[in-house]
Image (cartoon, rainbow, N blue to C red; front, side, top):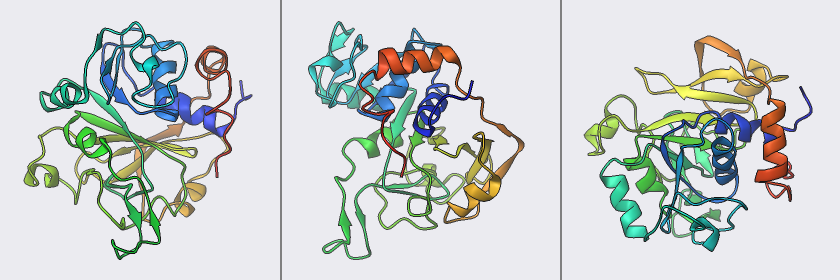
Length: 259
């Protein structure tokens, strides 16, 4: 079945990375849509957390913020931000969704500013929010973003959120918990992982209709390529129906153009 748009494929590809019986923390928008889809398909026992304190809500309609009352609806627990952060510190959260304006080959993310002068940047972004805590303390993180060479850069302008920092054991040397770090990057062109030794970004599957040249031309650094490189599986009919009819019937996310 090929009746889908790039945003739908990106959301479905991200949802497939989430595991049943896991605990994940998400923000609003596209990460929440991917989590809702996973929970309504292959991961019914997955527990979703929100930064403001919602644990395990029944998500019938997509929240508009991490503090939206819908993030607590029929949930397991209505707690507070400090308790959510304590869960991260205790190692109780498996996966976090992370986004940003720039990302480099080690999965380091900038969501603070564009430019070299912090006092007078070309563009000012919202900053970390909880992203630094999430990427520092969750066992793994997934970045979902549009793929172009303005976002995928050789050197980010500001380190907001740590990925694998400068390579192997760099996180541990910086005092971050061992065994944690970014695991996947999901874009409108491909799904990427990280090389187990160098910790550099590595393409694992290429979306249908996309070439290796397309991906490299839209990346500001040299990518690695998996020895088991395959084509991303197209969306199944059930995934598309649930995404369109239950997760995002108003097309708030899936109706967005990818630019």
